[in-house]
Image (tube, rainbow, N blue to C red; front, side, top):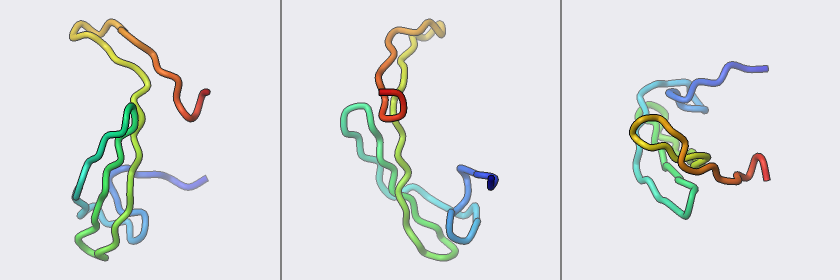
Length: 68
């Protein structure tokens, strides 16, 4: 099992990355990311699993691709 770091490029492992575009489709966010060192781009996918109020109380839980 390899170590995974959200803050580094999956190609060259540089932490010099930046978000290019964030797009939302329902409960899924796609974040286009560009590495400033190797100049490759890739996409990160985030899925909303829950919503909470400002006191930390859960308001909703959503079915996800992982636990349908």
